[in-house]
Image 1: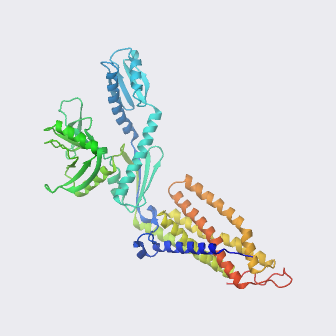
Image 2: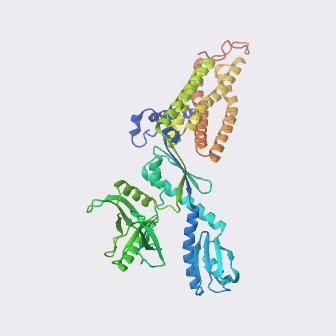
Image 3: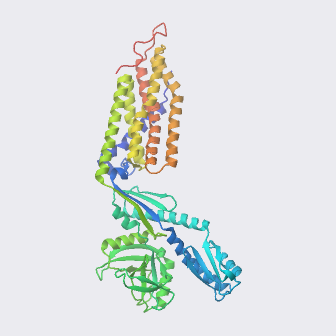
Amino acid sequence: MVTTPRWHVISVLLIALWGLAYATPNVLPALRGLPGPLPHKTVNLGLDLRGGAYLLYEVDIDALVAERAQMAATDVQKALREAGLSGASAKATPGGVEVDAGKAGRGGAVTRAVRGLGLGLEWASETKGSEKIFYRFSKSAVTEMTDTAMARSIEIVRRRVDEVGTTEPSIQRQGERRILLQVPGTSADDLKRVVGQTAKLGFHLVEDGGSVRALRLPMADDPEMTIPVARRAMVTGDMLVGARGVVDPQTQEPVVSFRLNGSGAKRFCQVTRANVGTPFAIVLDGTVVSAPVIRSAICAGSGQIEGGFTLQEAADLALLLRAGALPAPMQVVEERSVGPSLGADSVRAGAVAGALGLALVLFFMAVVYGAFGLMACAALLVNIALIFAILSALQATLTLPGIAGIVLTIGMAVDANVLVFERIREERRAGRSWLSAVDEGYRQSVSTITDANLTTLLAAIILFSFGTGPIKGFAVTLGIGIVTSVFTALGATRLMVVAWARARRGEPKKGGHRRPQNPLPGP
């Protein structure tokens, strides 16, 4: 006979009530401001439902390798001096370093000096007599640079997007050098303004105009004018610990106020004390923002950047500096915007599809299975509430494929009930009582239901593991729907059916196996 432990009844009721409570804020906006553990979270709408920006960036790894080559050439030059190779010199090439040995026959000594640095440079070629030797970065070194730069770029892009205050951005690496960025509720232009800029900041001393060591960089307000600056920065952007856009109380102009960490403040103090009266350049992404003269030692560990900014430009630059500089430039290779109206149309279409599917399932179950069908319909509503409750609690993002997964779940959710009800019909036709038929129907169907849903759940897991974007959204809602539908079929519906059967307590007449007139209760 059917036995239902009290803990089982209480557990099912509590889970059902939790699902209804946590799904409610999605339809009652007034509940979204509730504090603490009370239900207040809602499902986040994805880019295709809410509107937003889709940007595909490509990271310029070639520029990164060229920059590393410049740094490597400086290190190689120092190593050659320390090795006693007088007259030898090094300069950067697009993919490595070229060494002028100064004398023939120095190839072995030069190569030992270069390898000792551990920069990932390998011998490529040399001229006769080893007077000029070419080294390039090995494939493993370039791969390591690429992976590190991509991971760093994704992290910095995430910080910048989070600073803007958007919710549930999707940031993914695609292929070797590309980053896919999807952000709901914003425009592509706004997103590009804060994401694509490299924001590499440096404070460089201004060199004499005839110095061969100097780099000539254009001024931000007048690109025709260039300033010679030292190649090495005295302070770099990674020494910043804070930056914000403010209005200078003296000039009433927007500026960027910044603070340096301990090492940066000490270094800035030392350099400015030794170079009073000398101008220094504030360089952002290869452009001189301003070039003030050092009037006295700057040892407070803070300062400000002036550059004729608007208040919005100052705020954006401060945001970029706080998030950190990108390791390499990024270019937009694909751009799409989804308007809010198109997103609203998708929401309406998904709602209509869901409502129509739900109505047809409810009608079918009520007509074919009568009172049992109505119980399955009630459990189906609990099932939908549980899906939205779990998505809300996880703060998951619902996309159009996700809605498709929910609509599919609506049809699949009653599948387990159909198996059970048909089995109960067979047992009733065999002459069993209601309680006995219900008990046997559920007992015989559990293994079939479990196998069928585990198979589908496995497919959902595979889709989630190997899919991207929309496929993942579909897999998430499908997987959640499978779990909740099994719970409602073997938990909620079973409680209602058992309660109904106990109330009937119908027993077959003598003769045992005569077919009952009504194998399932009518509607």
